[in-house]
Image 1 (cartoon, one colour):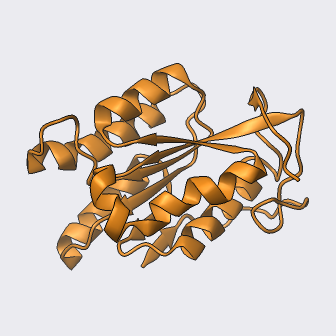
Image 2 (image 1 turned 90 degrees about the vertical axis):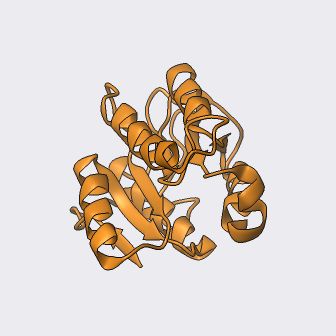
Length: 184
């Protein structure tokens, strides 16, 4: 199931994500992609492995992080224009399940405190309806653009990326984006 913030007024242009982005001042869009353990994502989260390959030719730099520490480092060192945050993200080398639950929310809070918080897509594991309601409320309170339940479909993520670029960046690359390659 996917939960998305209510629509805002539509914006024109055409997109590399299927109908909304024209290349601005020659920039590159940086996408932070976190996953609760990249080894685990190799099998169950094929979409996470395919996304960088699909988006790179469009001028999207996908910055991957397999832990809360890696994600924090990326956020501090690189402008992040869109973030995909896995709530099951471990904080570090420890596989403590309590740390895993906290790492995804910590990353959401860190992103929300940035001067220009990026639109964020939250990926959450299957859970009970009660846990789901609580998790959805927490993610939306932290400013999430969309919340996607596992199992994640690649087409769903691509559609959300297209809507993020259209709504948050008026169909253009973010200003101040790093110089990058062509979208063609």
